[in-house]
Length: 202
Image (cartoon, rainbow, N blue to C red; front, side, top):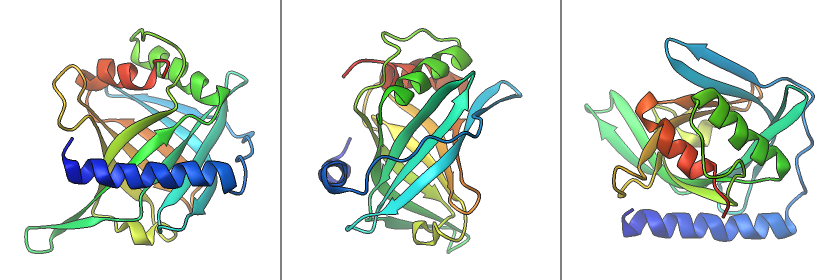
């Protein structure tokens, strides 16, 4: 991971710590169901969005919670407030690069890690989620500043400068108006490394 991305993540995590200490409290659990979508070889999760809070740096803390087989499944997502815009094909397509983290919010995050192993059919070293998983974020053709108005479609990178044993990609779509968070596969080849990242004790 390059130094610029590391410094962005460091700033994100400082604000995460402040939010957890001085923030507005835990998001309530949703009584809505988590949907497991298995189509054309891809296993995706759709989790109800229970809260979204903008913090001082302009970024967001987003909470996803829902029920699956009577267990609460969920996690928090921290998106930083700084984005670098990449213009592709003379404005035909814009990519917004930033940094963030998927954060363990409690036992519901361990349930998420367990469910991820089940749907991917990959066994991890633990069914517990680490306190946070750092990510590099690419918002695809969706300006993060418009998160209140339209779904934010993001490609996430874990250990972007790591070797093949650590590197992984996935999609995370955040729809504030529709109150849904989608955790979607990029490719089956990343299942093992996603389980390695999300299913281990810190």
